[in-house]
Image 1: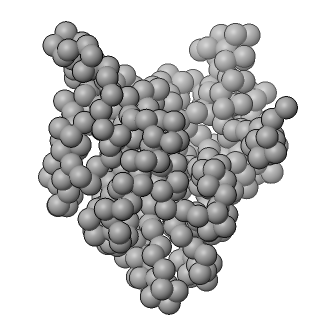
Image 2: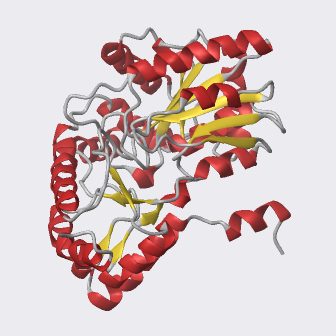
Length: 398
């Protein structure tokens, strides 16, 4: 017997996770080297050596009761100060430790800020295609997720439609750039226009609208593309970050929220986030990993980016040669490919060739499929003959 709310959530549980489990099943039959699992955004590059070194040093040097003990719900002050200083150096901001709340990954951070500021019946706007769990996070606070349809020509947000969809019930807007699943980076022009729209609507409705920037892929940008830092464009911005992708630590669940002083009622929201961290059952972000981040906050991840870029270039060029259509991703480690038939049918038929990819309808954007290229380079190159067979099945090749 489960709750009514969970019935829908269970019935619509993650397609991505289901594909990941299917990949493990197929690997057991055909061998892992013969299964091309592009389903899950699970980094394949190892964490930087400094991370392992920090863990060892902390275990050897720190008092155990401190290293594994409780701290403020916001996290260790010295770690938060290190994060703030890093942001200030890189983006010209003016944060201190009071603006940082350490969280259980970016997902934990989203749930904390929603719990802190969103009322039942409020509306949260997302831009399709979007990470499917946003719908669950909105449901957690009994809010309605309002989805702006995609501009499939560019996958930049359709701002004219966005403005029309803002109502007196709009409490938050969530953006994810570099984007999962498209790899698109929202341009500075897009962000400026979005901020202008939000300013107008706040005045029109006499209501604070929070812009939440979900940033687990911030460092993963290619070809010199700049990823705008959104607090510089709109005062009522909250940033959520995760080290899952940049430091290859997805299972450690460590990230942070940035709550700027410029945010309306900032002090009260900080307090509410601390309480939300506790009552949601997180209590605090993992103690050991907080300490690790304190020592590794500015670790160079250029080698990781170079590895993903190599995969990106080879896969993109290979798929284009086979007749597939796709916008070249500017960031993250996903490719969003147009499907020649219904996206669910296409992904199902790809399994014949041991290719596991995710239907675009999972991200509220049917007609496309997501390929997560955070895999070994051998997987990329070895998969291309199988993609060729898939392309031939649909008559894409010459």
